[in-house]
Length: 568
Image 1 (cartoon, helix red, strand yellow):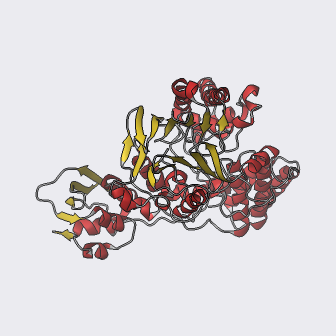
Image 2 (cartoon, helix red, strand yellow):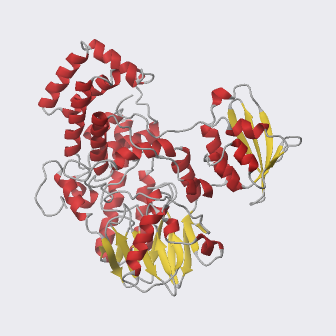
């Protein structure tokens, strides 16, 4: 309710405040005949196409609970039809996590409901949500601010939408994978032209054109803001050059036949000329940041120097739809640099610096101790030089996290930087940092959703074992083993050498111990649902020698998502 009205709020950047109020428009919306969207119930949209005797659902929000509620809202106002197909636009959890809230796995297994996804979809989910999932989930707490209270001094908007939903994150494995650059399918009597756009906003992503309705769905590649080349939570660095290319390709392929543009965030654009203008501006936005970053990079500018001087041209900056409510020119330019030249800025002084704790101790000592650093930081704060105050106080907090005046002044500093931020994730990150410095909290427990682990193939489950292996515990150990997964009829050779897991799908090693189990049993062991003895006791599990099994599962590290970010 604090966002109601039109009055300015002095703790919210005016531009972000405008976007925050626009994103308050929530409910079931008619786009055109037979095309509907549920917007504002989660960070992303659910798009619903009314086909012949069945619904086509495009993306299913973050959690099954919210997806079920979104579909119930639709059914409250439209005729009840079964779900004929679920279409995943891309591999981010706010677009697939609600799958079991809208489709029944039994109907999928029976072939009555189809599930479409872009090529590489499951591999991309495994890389981001599983292998790097623990660290990414913790960092996402800063990007989205889930622990911040909504209000003028707290969470106001994510830029891309209001907030991310909570509840059961789920996944239903695709039955149909789009592999050609453009594929046409007829689903429930509706023609869909699928247009792959890999390596753009997600590693696996696709657009969809519906010629029957003149509707082009650009997934998350053309929303009314500047998106991320690498989000603050972390990800593979995206390629803005290819992003721009696929926007141009969409205009070329579908522009003259498009009357309405939709995406899986925000609101539609109506009218062919408006659609083409918007897509061409988005095309130029991403290409400009890419090209100018690379130009300055080749002139010897460092990431921080590029970020300080690069901006988008006035012809784009004056368009609200190109503003940095989610991504920013600053951190996007740094992502471009990283994509081409790595994290290293080329200065040997930055090649092997001390850890933040050790650097902090030395800076504080060199400046005359904690009290003197605090005095200088307070002066910077009083003068409104919050970036310098934050840099000084960061050294102080890492040097001595028990020094309460430094923690509290850093919290005040972060707060002021957050109030000034146009980007929702920047605001949330600063305010989450302030909150943790004041309370001592380090987020809340998170982990990879078990329903996602259940859907992974054997290759990715073995990868997950590898990244959890406590190498120090298996130094000097070695084994080979043959695994047969009876439910999927697959043979895999899994071994250990030099403190690393190695794996050969389809192979068997003569004379090596043999283990028979199901993929589901392996998933249970990997995700910690059973211990080693529990795994060996599962019906259908047998081992000629349990040594390799124990070597694997008794040396798996446990991850905690409650680690420090703004302090050691």
